Image 1 (cartoon, rainbow, N blue to C red):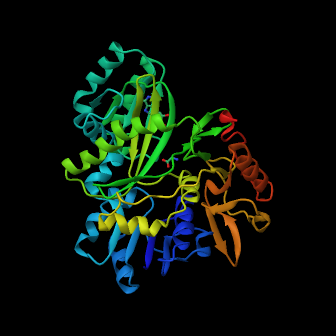
Image 2 (tube, rainbow, N blue to C red; image 1 turned 45 degrees about the vertical axis):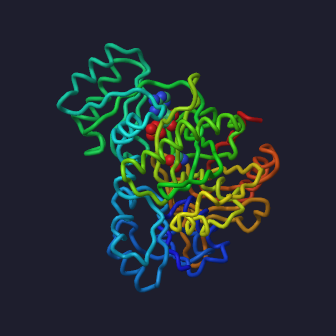
Length: 421
Ligand code: AMP
Ligand code: GLY
């Protein structure tokens, strides 16, 4: 099977690494890929949002399967685009289903309709902004204020005072802080609890459970500093036991899949449930219509099964008979970033020492390859993944491997997973 993978991050490195291990994998192309993906396939200089060029490339290279890594091609409708090219299968949700990530208001309405536990909310826009101001008067802080559309993970503000909340709402709606993405705003009840993430692969009808994970979003040790795309991750999450998983299945996953069916929203891809364990049980914080980054870098190494077979079974409607084999080992990943990330940083520094890493997998993210040398090319540079039968040992391996890798401005969090040791 010839495959075109869309994306360029650490998630795509892990997807390419995993697909390349499959006997079913023919030619593998990554568009646009990064400095590490040529280990698994051929980087192609194609924009994942340029569907016409993707179609031309796919036809010229006998592509059988397009795997969509990030959310934007899905939100823009890549699955729908290829419906008129039935020889090319696409691993992605349909455009309507991708709204579960692309619009917080859409996701809230979906959860309300299908009785999926989540924070209570109201929706406001320029016409009824006063209702938002009244909501701040009637309720107690903290207030959760969410831009409706995609905002690169920056569209959620948690505000501790009415004044701040009001100013944030004004900046979102009146000053259009995130352009069209913040014309609509969702105001939510603040939920207290511990966060964790659950992943499934679905064809919109059947699903299989994949390993769970917990990521560390804040930049600095002790969960302080700015939010990032994620500075590290562990899998499995130690407090997620069988009983909690059963609740998540019955109260959240199954109603979600049934909701996709009832609302006629085709889905051939991953669902990432961002959850919080509250006193009343698990609730949904957000849906993502893709795998996480860096969650993928701990999820895929724990899956023994063939991922291309998983995709095939999705299309053949034989997912429910499929037993995905998952390792009981712990996987950990620690992100090596560029000093200054998630704000301004300098890139273009040579990265050395990767050949000395024996105990971990190095998944490239913001890197580029030039004359066989690897240079930094982004905020999150690489993810260092390790596996062992204890969390402690896996983390030790990741941190030892990190010492082997050198570049100017190398930074990382040195407390990934420590809360569970
Ligand atoms: P989101 O982009 O929706 O995942 O929100 C980003 C982060 O904000 C989440 O990972 C949570 O830490 C926090 N958050 C979002 N919604 C809530 C909520 N209703 N209550 C408490 N924290 C929240
Ligand atoms: N690590 C969080 C995300 O991928 O959204």
